[in-house]
Length: 89
Image 1 (cartoon, rainbow, N blue to C red):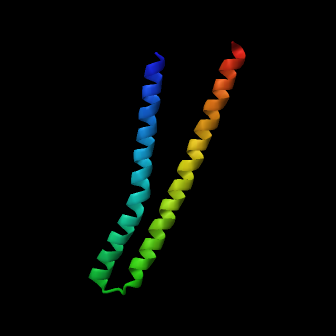
Image 2: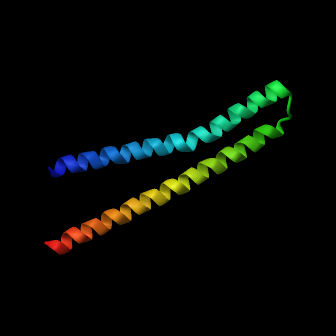
Image 3: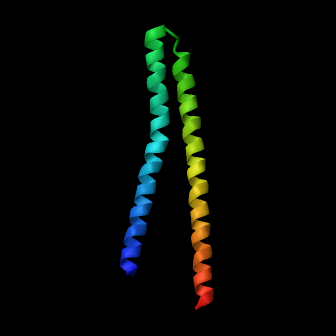
C-alpha cells in the first residue's frame, strides 16, 4: 500500500512539473507569435516584438509565482495532516 502511495505521489509531481513547463513556455511563444502576425499584417515596427517578449515573460513570472504559492500551500497542509496523524497514535 505504501509503494502505491509513493508511486502516485511521483506521478502527481511529474504532472505538476509538466504543467509548469507548458505554463512557462506558452505565454512568451504565443505573445511573440501574435506580435509577428500583427507586424506582418499591419506593418508595425520591430518594437512590437520587444513588447510581446516582455509581456510574455511577465505572464510566465506570474504563473511561476502562482504555482510556487500553490505548492507551498500543499506542502504545508500535508505537513499539518502528518502532524495530526502522528499525534493521534
